[in-house]
Image 1: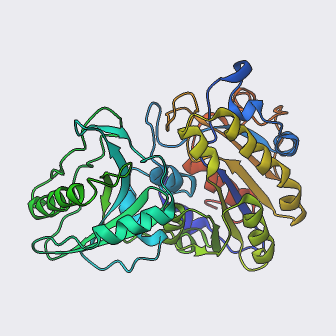
Image 2: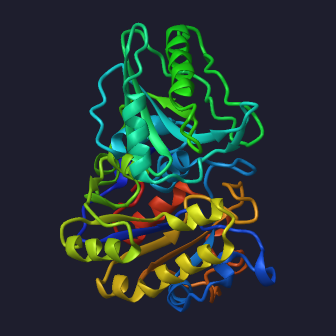
Image 3: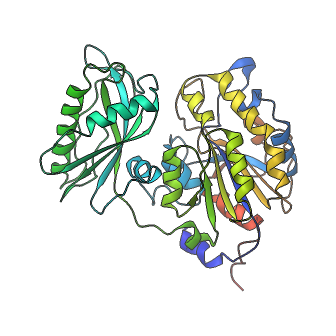
Length: 400
């Protein structure tokens, strides 16, 4: 459903909506035949499930494994096929890099390559942010013909690459093979007119490999998500809300900023983020509250650590509810099963709580329980925003 259609129905209200997004929350059976969410002790989320409505949402489409960018856009009501953006520009916005018209941005990983030049660790052991800063300082000294190079730290193993120069196209294929055991790829064009950018990126990669040759484990870089700044309607324009984001990780702040959310200063621990929510609750009417480590531990294959983060989040639900939000949506952007150590195509558990819900028979917030919920087994993720607005009494009726 087009945003322009919802825009015509959106109306002002005093109600408040909280989107609690546990990144990568969906899982697959592991210990005792249970997923991470099913294994976790979640009495407070279970209470919301009993009082609200539940189901599973499909971030993109059946069988499609989503990246974090399109998965989040879908949660916020933007068709991720129509509104496409690479992770590069999200990373740039997330660290407040002053992007200029014509810049191309890419999200980078420091990685480890072996003696044969093949990737043995895509994240270089998740090096510290301090080490990242030292390496970015070295890479920033690289010069390329016909353009400027900017290399900025994002966090841990992730960095931002921005190329600036006339006639650069972002229509480039990723250099990240996304698996170990393969060599980093060369940049290549996906359409006519990208040859200059291809030459610039490959020049940078060759020089980066030389600069990092003795910096094990971070002895090479991988690039993906080449992109430029798009012009989209903000959430305020589309849905009539005053939105704020509480997210510790730069890329997710970038998504929020792209959609016109106010980025609130916060610490990285879940309790820090809840403190921020409490302090800011009177100032906004839509809150995006992002929990990252469920995804990180899923990617690391750490089942028990992912369970623990779910339980930590559950413990803070009573404080959230004490703020008297009108609508609470709890879900993830995608599934990241520990078993697969990466994103997957599996539908994602979701619940909506409000006093206007027509409760279903779900008593526990988990994958198998949500199968029986009234939201259905494969609700399009874009519908969650519409349903949140409806439950917050923020949508007018359609037609006479």
